[in-house]
Length: 433
Ligand code: DLL
Image 1 (tube, helix red, strand yellow):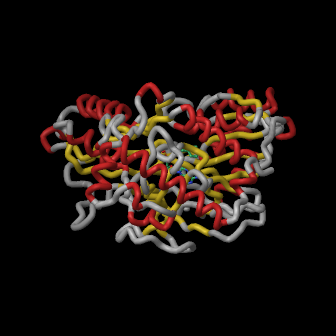
Image 2 (cartoon, helix red, strand yellow):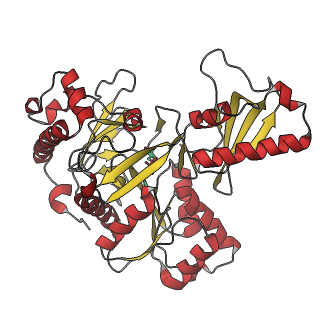
Image 3 (cartoon, helix red, strand yellow):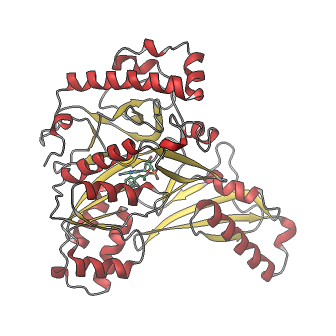
């Protein structure tokens, strides 16, 4: 089913025209309401009147995650606080998370794109959707929730974790769809077998999985374990949350809802715009956002775009599965983690040195993070009890900053390999791509 045929199957010509109009309006809006953007545009000698069509997108400046941090919390908002009805944030560096705001219309638009995503895989009001993405500051839970309600499905807002309860409700309530991270889906699949639940009692038919990279092998594993079709959904909080793009049953990439989110692929080093089909960094301009419209936001996600019409009838461009990132961000159990966050914790403690290694692995489909930390010479000879106490303190500080539990392994000074160039801070043993 196509939720909004008018926009999803538009002739490319008309779509580009629509994007141009929306872009023009947006640039004017931010110029007059966001001092940061007015200064940026003036620096480049751009006036709102200079934007006449979508072709002018390329003259506009980029926005980065650092710009969001520098404007923490609300300085990029284009609307007064009275018009903001929702705030979300992604876990961030030392107290400075990335904050995003929504007006009522933004929430309506978000619900619509998630409704379109769900309809894309045949979801209707006959479905019972178990939303096992986290509810809270993370956009996964509430994003899927509003979209599922919009199509009239019955929503089970169970949030993440609590595996036994997930399985019990799945069986008792007869959930037909499940939305969660792919790693949690695989974990649930294994738990189902461990709990010896009769698969015939489970009515699940499909899953909406995203928020982290996952491979085709992972897809087959989930499909086999849960006996469902597994679909990929992509999004990021800065742009809206989940529902920026979604896979249709043809599974030839994820359709980007281009009437709202204008995509580009750039060379991450030169920022040059690349043609369809080439691998590069994905950039979005969410042209219809009211509370926090961003100009050419650099996602850091690496992928390719394809513009040929899809067999499903949609003309919206398709993005391939992300093949990685152009920065060092890791996604561990759905939490965005930068090695620099770990470093900031260690630098604040006198007993440790800023030499560390993050080892990420996956056991039973759950991510585990071990952080190896070098202890200062002076403290290493201390009693075991004190070392144990230090380990606990690092663990607590890391959990406070990352919102994630990590195993801390204290190592002797000089053990972690020094690099002559870029330090190797991460060993990722998961096979994500
Ligand atoms: O992860 C929003 C979301 C929730 C998407 C639920 C899908 C489902 P953030 O926490 O801001 O937002 O993280 C955004 O996660 O830049 C990608 O690197 C990664 N990501 C999201 N979806 C996918 C996906 C949400 N399907 C960051 N495949 C993005 C690969 C993904 N990576």
